[in-house]
Each structure stands twice: as structure tokens, then as C-alpha cells.
Length: 266
Image (cartoon, rainbow, N blue to C red):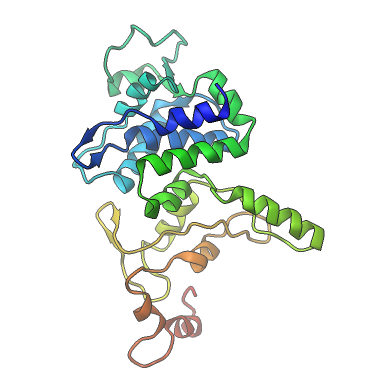
């Protein structure tokens, strides 16, 4: 299967539809696995990890539901020919389970991932990972969500441009922003600031949903090269429709300036 075949296979994932609604379960699981692949992590993902991380993605980017079921894409993505699952003892999964069973997945240590041939091609070609990710996003999600989803799964869709910028910066003797992403960085920044705007303090969380804020999407290096949670928030965590009120309040001064004077994060 060449690169074009892979892009086509992932863009044509067979997802549940009703009217104009499309289930995001398979695309989100595939994107999460692509993020792991881009970071050089193991091919097979323990179901316990999928149960936690893909559930979070479904809560954030899927339709509002009382319950989310990450076991469904973990099992049904097999039918698209781009996924396989194995129990912890390594036996073939075919014929063992006829339907997704969360308790069995957990108790028997099931793992899932791209088949070896697909994983090998993706692991060897970072640009192919980006193209496949873009194909999935374009086919299954509105463009307004692409960057947020990519950041949540640890994919940097601008990596190619950044690598070119880094090469130019190296030639000029200057520093360039690294292109790697940590999928947990965004949530860590949100939690560190209790889902509040660093400028005006507005609480933008309603239940599991971030109704107001754009989460931090950039990896901002500290002196030691690690991600800085404060830097990430300062770089990009501002409310969408409250931006004007954050920048200038009734007294005419910028809240960011007063926050700096008062010692609050700025």
C-alpha cells in the first residue's frame, strides 16, 4: 500500500451517519494512533490507554453524549483494514470476540494498532503521517477544529514548514520554534490555570466542554528545552468572544498591564 493508497483508505473510513451527523470515533482513534506513531511510540496501544485518552477526545470533539464508548472504534476500525487488535497473550483476535466488549479488552490486556506494514511506512515517513492526518481531518471534521484536534493528539500539521524554517534559522544562526508536540501539554496548561483566562480570570469551562477558550496550541520552550506551561498560556490562551473585554476594561487600562503589576501571570 503506497502513500496515496493510505491517504485514501483513511479518508474513506466507514463511519456511522445519521442525517448530517457523523460519528467521530474511528477518525479520532486513528488520529491518536498517528500522533503516537509520529513520536516513535510502540505500534500496539493498550486498550486501557485508549479507554482514557480517546474517551477524552470524544468528550471534547464529539457530539454531546451522557456516555462515550471508545471500545467501539477500538473494535470496529478493524473492518476498514487499517487496524488490528490482539489480546495480551498475543493470540489472534479474529474469532475471539464477535463484538466490542470493554471489560474483556481491559481484563485480557487487549492492544490495538495499525498493521505492521502500515505502521512501518508511517514510522519511516513523517510527511506521510501529516498527509494522512490531513486527509482524516478534511474528510471527517470541520476546518475550525483541525488545529485543536491535531494539538490534542500531539500532531503538528505545520511541521514541514517549521523544519524548513528551522533550516533557514540554523543557516542564519538563530533559533526556531521546535515542531514536536506533547499531547498532554494542552491539558496541563488548562489545568494549571483552572480553565481560566490568564488576563481577565474568566472561567471558561462548562462541565467537560471548553465553551470559551482556545487552548494552548504551541510548544513554547523553556531554557532547558522543555515545554513551559506559563509560556504556552501566555502565547495563545485567550477567549474568543471576550477578547475585547480582556484587552481593555472600563478604566481604559489593559488588564494584562495591571496583572503584571499585581504579580499575576501575564
